[in-house]
Length: 187
Image 1 (cartoon, rainbow, N blue to C red):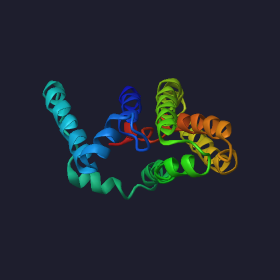
Image 2 (cartoon, rainbow, N blue to C red):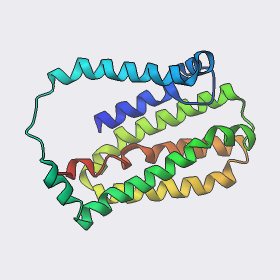
Image 3 (cartoon, rainbow, N blue to C red):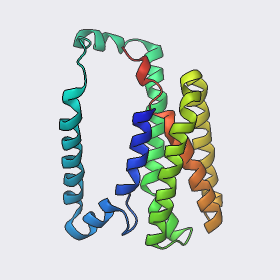
């Protein structure tokens, strides 16, 4: 969960929707290709600094990895978070226009709201992480149920600014551990 939490903490730097986020600033002034290139260069530099110190492991042969795809339980364990996280990303793609046109926020305020979303997601990772370690299935299904309820509620609560803010912060919470739960159980 530490890695997932760091991903959540890093997210607000590149969120679309306002001039305050570093990635958005670069994208608006130098183009989105430059913003994505900057993120790629920073990620590569981090990899080059960290990977040499990570101890190696024997790895799993490709034939064994492909054979595991026939396992229905593994397929289900991977498809549930894939569909849930995919649905969250799909809804998230439309969040900035929704907050601007439906809820009535201006772009600079939306940046702060998205920062709050990222903070809620970080809290979700660090707070729900121990629960997910102990009860992974319940955490996964509970997170997805909360995500579905929150996204459904946003269509009603998003009509007002206060409702949109509260729903956005609740939405950020289940983003935390959901997508990472099956990873430790993979061969």
